[in-house]
Image 1 (cartoon, rainbow, N blue to C red):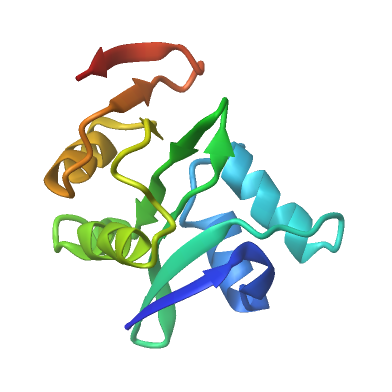
Image 2: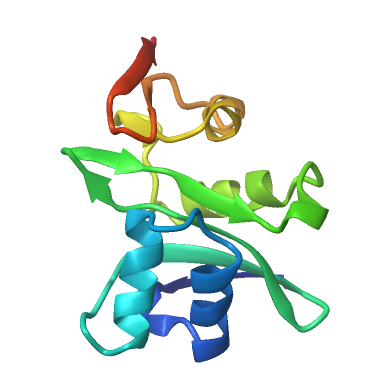
Length: 137
């Protein structure tokens, strides 16, 4: 059920799902996926996908931001709390996309909790205005 690829490897249907319903509107990642879909850019950002019932239900991705690795994810509302985001994030760790020894930037309390469950120690959460919420050693 878990597929590891890059943004360049996304199918048009997956790009549309992320662009329309599986992303915060106007987020940097949504724009990256939509620009890739339109041919405006190329992206090697690693992304894990979870499909079910013929549709994309969730994703988790990581890239470098402000000199830190990031963990970003989005799960369809009907499937939240089922462990999909944790499984996708664990797949990024298992594939050595994420390194527990490096600082990890996250953008939500839920993602911070998942990072902690996966053994990350140096986690920095940022608000939607890109200001740090608090460093949790």
